[in-house]
Image (cartoon, rainbow, N blue to C red; front, side, top):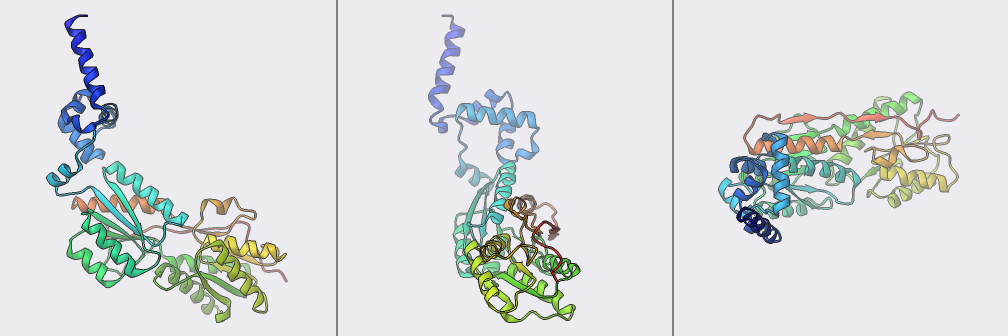
Length: 357
């Protein structure tokens, strides 16, 4: 074997031996493997969106091939950033939040950040504790859900000068940054659509409004429009409950037992609507021929149900992506809009019709 071939073989063996322990692979090894400078490798690790796609892919391939593991602690010490973003959501058992968080994570990864997610089960004290934990871990920014928080939470975040944003809600008058949609306006839109169909006899299965400004705003939007048309919505026609199919069925059962049957039931989300429809089908009540039912969220299943659900489309994926861009811009002290409204559209499908005579 020639000296050149022998040298090359040793390099290959050395690379293979180092791969299981990526800590032994240096930035220079990655640069040589990718055919770029160490500065380019560093940019890919810290600001990948500023690197040409060809070089970014080459560096990523070299990192995978060599088993390179960046020293996160060293990077954080050098940049005074952990490159970790925290997100605190009300529940992890919710497809709507899952879609938004998935989009957020994907976009943050593109920017070179890692996401940590925590939940508080609609408990504002628990939300505060989760935020404290994330701040102790040194997160660079935070995503929160809604605009209703413990006042201590906002004061704590702002005292630490940590960028944050409220999502899934929109309040242009707030001093807090937000990216979301107007829950009240969206609820008004779907209620007005039902009035235009000719409905006057309403009932509501709402999410619990305590510590949930989104549910409260949706219920407020519904009741406002009904009152504006000089119609009534008695207390026994409003069921507040937890978000589950079972709870949707139970709430619908209560409404059906309450006396005169409403011609339409507005549900606080698609999961509750699914339960309401299931209860009607079990009772032999046809949807929408005998009763119309609406949801809110537009989950993937909603268009595939039989009948397909009339609902409000919540742009969770778009919110997650825009939230990622906003937080990264704030970390870099780049210009960004304090309030961003994303439209929530009415999706008319098969669970609504004109009231039967």
